[in-house]
Length: 173
Length: 106
Image (cartoon, rainbow over all chains, first blue to last red; front, side, top):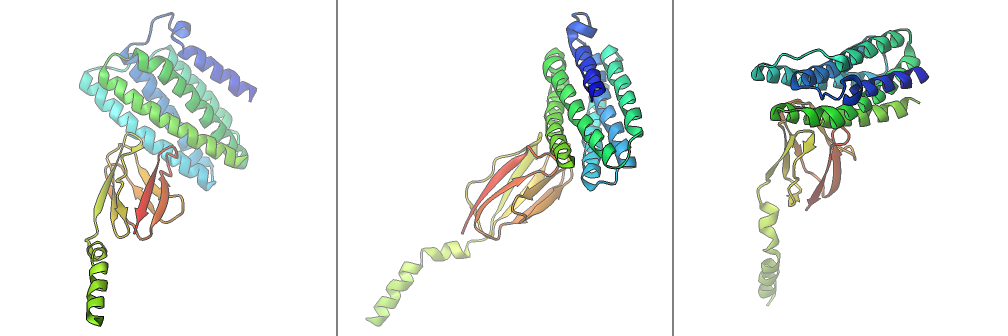
């Protein structure tokens, strides 16, 4: 748990423009990359849950994560194509990916109810982190109106997922 | 006299008749951007709700009292026939923050 909190703290830190980006807010190409990466991370986590968990509620939640994030990411891909923007890798998206890989390796060692609880706990934490990043950094920094609007939809979705993950996590305790 | 009374009784009953035989109506509730749109105020038993999911996400219209549970893939519609008067709270199974309320009268 301490590890989890520490690593989430590190990501939250990286998502603060003043920290990782040295006072330079991310540009639209970087924002698109961060948002797309966050969606993909959650899809990968859900796929791991679908491969490992036998719990009906956990599986249903994971299926929802795959479906919803794939829908947003499809829209995001279509939008960047339309805008002729190439998503640009950046320290924040790299930090998110590195942290997610580490978490996935940790969860891979667990099974049964222990895995289910750890997955749900991490989903709550991950969605909280991304919600803050969207609300505090990514949405205010986005220049293109369509990108801003898609990010707002993403924030609404992540908030719903966070609530759902909290219900799930509470039910598994 | 009896006949007169009968006529009066029929006349009294008459205003209710058109309502009882009024055709059932369809009401559309649009779902978009992780929200249920406005719910029509005048819902009656026999009417139908058409749930139109315009969102990019799959949703459901699920009654808390278990009276209906409509699965709504992105871009699809589904129907619920209102069979009982009363208030029904509904929500989306996938996105529990999405809620609404139907007030159905006879």
